[in-house]
Image: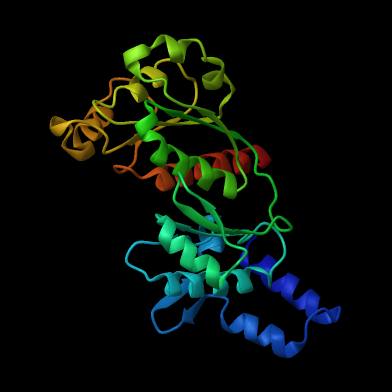
Length: 266
């Protein structure tokens, strides 16, 4: 939804008597950004500019701060129809932090492997076009891979998972090659030496987003070895995000699919 669309929808709601002029004025006041508790400014224009709403980074914030931000985002999202701002989510949330958030917001949902806390609004969410294939090299990579998968699903994308198909047993990947052919974008998560994205990019005809993880023995340097391998890949069509950044990979995949959909409409 563009800003003119939001303003038009708001004016129509006033003219049809769904909301009062006073409520409309309050919504306009915080259309750009909204101060919360003296410690945060919620960027309500994020979705208007980029197509995806602002997401809360959990570490460094107290459970009370996270809950207060989530409540403010939920209340503001409910003011506008359509797909804009359909989900409120916080990343890197530990289980004990979620327990405290849930005491404040009973509707909060927790995805333990991904460490994501979310407030879903099924009435607002519309499926987005495209399929994201998500591969992990090993089981130890699953927290990062699931962060990417849950982020993409909460944003409305269809995700097809394929776990534990690293190069140490390449037959596992080759026996599931249909996942590569059915995807419109692939996210490949790997630690150790980080070779899996290069192999996948040599087989796939779509963009590949490589995610290095901090999994590995000492010489992997907490993911630096995998990162350098992915950056130096001889396969084409690979983009690389930061170490352990499953969330960023999902957002990049989403932007690729959104851009493709826009081009198709032209």
